[in-house]
Amino acid sequence: MEAGALKRIGAIANVLCYLSASHLLAQTHHESKPPETPHLQFVTEYVRELAEVQEIRDDFDRQMDPTKNPDALSVSSYSFTRMILELKSQTRILSAMHLSKPYDVLIPSVAGLYKQKIALFERLLETDRTMLEGPKSGVDYSKLAAELPELRAKIDDVDHTLFDATPLVFMSLVNPRPDSQDHVSHLVITCAERTQLIVQMNASFGDKLNQKNQPYGVSSATVLRDALLTKGYKCSDEPWD
Image (cartoon, rainbow, N blue to C red; front, side, top):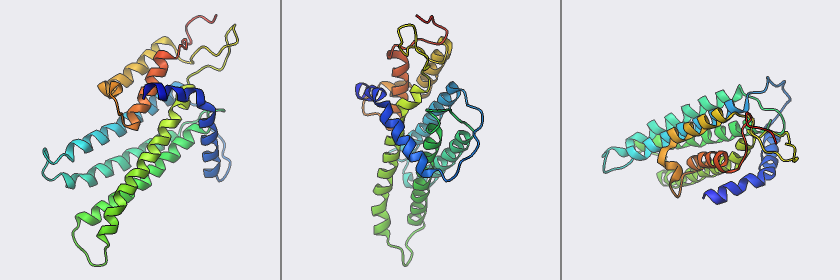
């Protein structure tokens, strides 16, 4: 996963084009933009959001284990509600942030993907409640049951899109100013800030960052961590050659 994921850093232009198109389709009018959010603040928040969503997923998986909880099916509504509330909170936080070009489409596009997930989880919650209420006339339960895997597949597709956008999140930390060799070689963050960001990811995800077959949220954090560790960028407080 790591090698393939890091290759996406080199395809950043394609990701930017996709996000630009997505944002333009969703934008209905021009609004004045707030002052630019420090890029480190945005990336730190993005990592926190990945971790919060993963925690809800992990808790859901634990509670849905019938060997540990005989009433496992009754916890799904609770988990779906937690996810909806968390995504709504994250969307509100992102709405107060703004990045300048060429990253100006990144935050609105991520927030738009969160809104897609909210709608899908709300449909899951509605379906789940209908099935848990018991038989009612006029309800096609077989149709509802068939819809569940489709909704989960759509959620996975949104998560995949967020994963594909993660290299652009990392690139927002790269200083576009070239060095004496005309190379883009530095980050906009200090060595201490880079270390703190890596510590945050390690603390939030632990051993999951080194496991195979990672869920998309963990894979996104792995891409960010490995890019900070292996791409060879110097920090803002290191010498400019």
